[in-house]
Length: 341
Image (tube, rainbow, N blue to C red):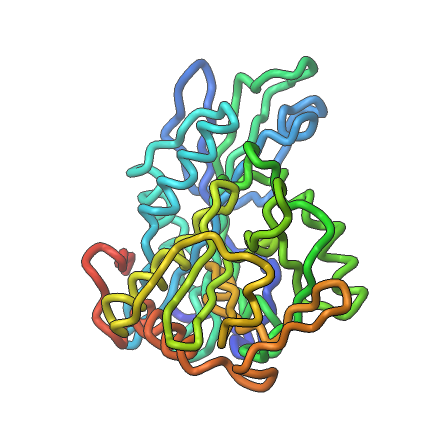
């Protein structure tokens, strides 16, 4: 299929409407078969559950063109499983995991002309999401829901590519100790909007959120997990029940251990030990890994030895290996790559 006339190498991380999206409705206790549709508009009651009480969750994943010309997605089974966890926590009906993966494939195939070519640096971002669609005025779950998937071609999440970021320690909490930090609920991201806008206004790229109970331990940013490298080459990631379990982070830890032979550890990471690390990165579907050069804690600068010019050496190896797996340059572990075409 002929590709769309898009300047792939200069794409930002924004929305471009594509031709087809998948829609399935939940009514009377069951999901319908769902279908690909052309209309990107949604019509619902002014009293819909999503509008009144934010009953919605979502996922984020990408489709890639590999070196040998295949179109693939990366570990969609984990996105399906994580969305199931989100739905259960928000009292929403689970969209079956096999149907989820099937719908993702249909959307990518239908929008093949928007899948960026290999080597362009761009990808097709896929957004599955679900929301309460029936009227709800009392505080309770909706009776009807809509599950949708759209796709849009995107460039890098952070402008400037791999330039190390400067982040600040936030005074705000991302999630409550026993709240919804571990699921991909829309309400979590609404809570992060004020802190990220003010961070940008003050010249920072992102926020570092601490644990909401003691405010002594590193959790995550508004949209990515942290990954640290010790001075002796160990890969460390924060452990917390209120951190979203990033698929990219889990994959990077396995890559570090199985491909690079590095020691890995998931544990509590304290703010006062940041200065002992050699490298720091933010990892997630959108950014893969973005290096962090500096953390500012209320005026105190914590500068990582990897510096503000380039990605640190271990972080770079992790990035190159995982993206190599995603793009088909390196053999993937069994089940990681879902071939669509």
